[in-house]
Image (cartoon, rainbow, N blue to C red; front, side):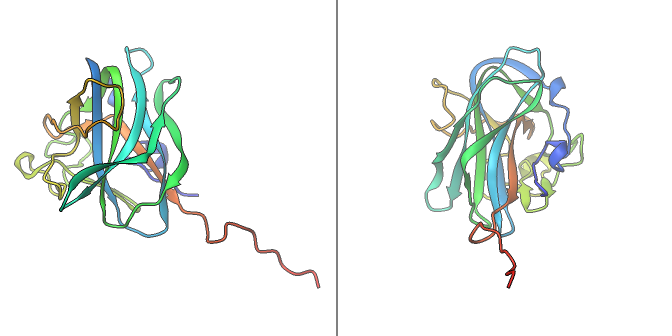
Length: 208
């Protein structure tokens, strides 16, 4: 079964080395904007990166959804807590996979403390992995940084991609992060995979 992510190489992601992009901080949120372009896929879980040695705790991650009429709204049913981390990308599965609306703008946001991971210019001109036009991996499209940073496929929300924000709580559901530095790539990712076939059962051939 083929699965898709933005950065996690095992899922066809571009393999950014986030270990070199750690910044010490307090409670903070980081977010990545994306859309799903094909029917028949679900968001199965979220990833947080940890280099294995830096001071870092991942609290939770969730989805936010954007509409041109009302802006950003949290998808509270997707809020999922992380447990003990190991070095590398840490996956936390959603209790119930989320079925996105094709073409709708979403953001996956991670709440963490101690520090965060960031690749400068990760989604704009000067990208270490040529992601100045964003990232396309199967049904997953991650938007680039803004046009001012020579991003070729900026988010329709008008908000730069990726973003970070200092918050007073330890939850990803409080507010969407809206700060940006050099259209960087944040150390958060998602897992996209095929939705189960309708009915979810096995068709057995008759023995008669």
